[in-house]
Length: 68
Image (cartoon, rainbow, N blue to C red):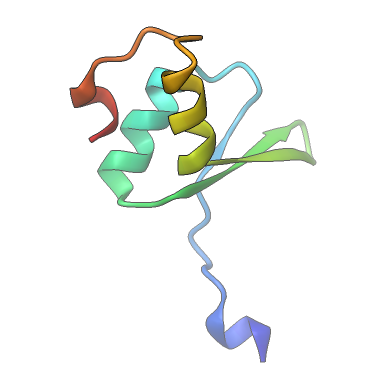
């Protein structure tokens, strides 16, 4: 069953959370996905791949220490 395999301690951020803070959270918790929520509605998911794309396109100023 799905409930036996899913993660129960899901990390959640808001649409206003900075990429730097999301990187720090992912690094600290050793996770690759974060749920984005506003009020009581899930509005998206940020993945490690999304962060890499943002950094590689230089849309945000992060140092290597922020995401490794």
